[in-house]
Length: 79
Image (cartoon, rainbow, N blue to C red; front, side):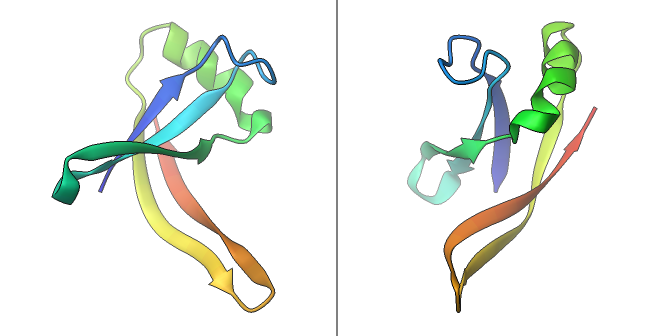
């Protein structure tokens, strides 16, 4: 599954927001699954704004069991 990080400078809650988009190749669609946590975005956006290539890889989908009804994901981000 392909993962894309997209800068969202117009975000009202975080000017350094970076949304996480996955490509669902089997149905030829893209969907936003969330945002990079605020604590990581200030450094990440500096790198993205400088034009350096940022690679994201979906490692694992987590949650959805027992008391943790929400899902999340582990993503490896490399520069």
